[in-house]
Length: 355
Image 1 (spheres, rainbow, N blue to C red):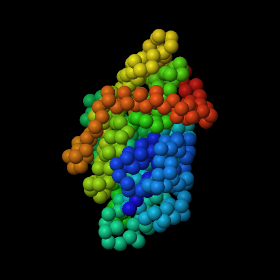
Image 2: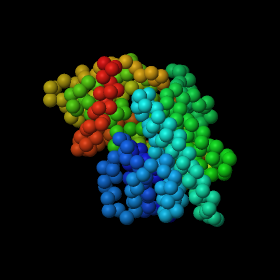
Image 3: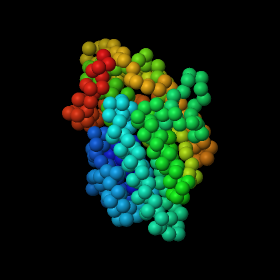
Image 4: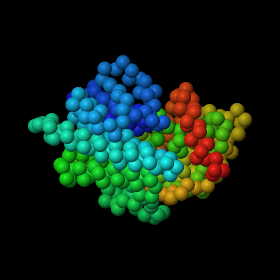
């Protein structure tokens, strides 16, 4: 028995692989193209581990995916691979259409062919789990109830539109072909190995480097925050007990505005790694022009996954964010390796025009 994990060297994918192998001995085949956000260093602790096989490759490569399924005979595919940064999708949407839509289509077709040839218990047990986002639901007003699994899709960025399209493909392959799928739509993840273009790792890295801490608009965009290992445990629960064809929203029950997140990070860094100047990191906060189509609020109603599968997040935001800051402070070599070359050029491209 084994599972195939796509996007396994990315932020959530690598955390999932590490978490999976901490908890069981079922082998993992990790597939990743190693684009800018894929980092093999995330999986360095598994080097030499017979339970783990890493494959460099593209989910759009049908021949490769077919070969992996035939060779390893996984009982499940866990599909994380995606282009996932809204700002990048605004600057260059093409890769998002290719990876998130064409890539998911390729995986679904390969999985359908593989699953159709299985027999008996192996066929009944097979699952295709698709990892998606709350951004497919659009934006909430301040007093709107949180997103449920029945909310209308209203994506507002090229990224969220591409993920919405992939969600629809997964649903269609179940209803048309009978492929045994499940989908989870998660809120904003945070934790170890988060690529420093996203808010929390960007603020930590910039603060320690003495750089400005850029806040879009007024900083009052509200998100629900989910510690990444809680997300991993939710996916394990869906794989183990989730109903075929169902969607499960996964959230942290932690709604707060971006500015509050930045203030919390500054205060933790003031405590754990004070600036040599003696000043608070809050003094590095700057406000920049908001991005186009910036959704004002996301919030997840995660009662369905709790009711049906017994899952709730183990971390509060206070415990999770402290663990996150401590991890980044203890892993500055990892951060330094990421903050080089193409990533630095990207930050300059994205933020220079907003100052």
